[in-house]
Image 1 (cartoon, rainbow, N blue to C red):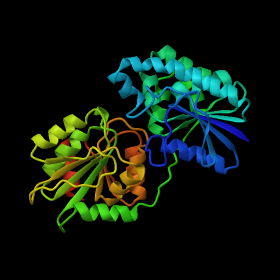
Image 2: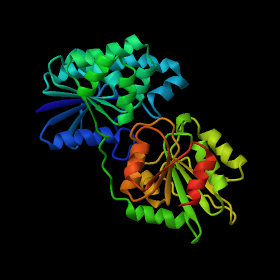
Image 3: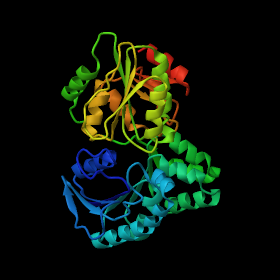
Image 4: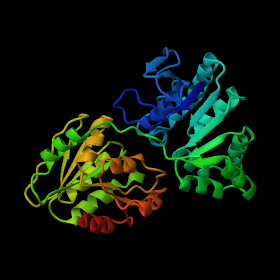
Length: 370
């Protein structure tokens, strides 16, 4: 079987945290015996295909828009980046023309990845994965446009895979009853697969560096530093939770400067490392809390910080099936999160996930119980 996977997010190296779940999904397809070609944003249409293990990766351009920390954030920062959407679509269509017939087509994100497959591959079975931002974009679109997108995919007999029940419910709830029933019949809910490399040794080393006494605890936040992640709540919660608590913020983004200033203004020593992979730790006077900003790290190092923690803090307001929570639980780390996506449903069956109200006081109270 010959399959094509189209995505706007795919790692450029083993340690790139972007789109690793897309790679894991494509690798699972390859392990089933398929010849898998991945068409991904970035690079140039002139770049030759490259090998990524069992996968063949074809770059289609569009990196000005589809790159860290996400298309929405990048377009908000510079609206001119939206102009790269048309070259990306043209690059995808050219890559599909070069590939020729395929037996299966997979789109990660309804928008913008399903449309080129609808146009270029009218007969190949189509599977469309909805991850969150794409559904939120559809919900903000005019009702007629949203219905037209879903109708075109249903007419094509596409199968939908939603990362979370909350996503499917939100989209179905915005459609007329007949179309909502058709969507339900054509879909399933399946959180994205992910691979977890061994990080226990590195996690232990990081913990020894930052947790110095028996009364000290380590909380970690790992995310893009954008407004919807609400990292300021984590910083304020650490301030209120009492002495001996350290916070490491793994990630980067447009909110970083404001968050560092918040940590400093609040009497928390805010240490920074602008170089990826640095393991330095902020030192503070006894009894004070520390916030350390690591910047963007290779995925293995980011996972090691999560594995080193007493708790993962995840106060995000917009989620579907947050991979970072599932990674923390796979590493045996408890999680304090706010209600978003399917997090509350997960907490009902996993005692290691605690859902707190979206206030610093509620998060602080939960932290004191860890």
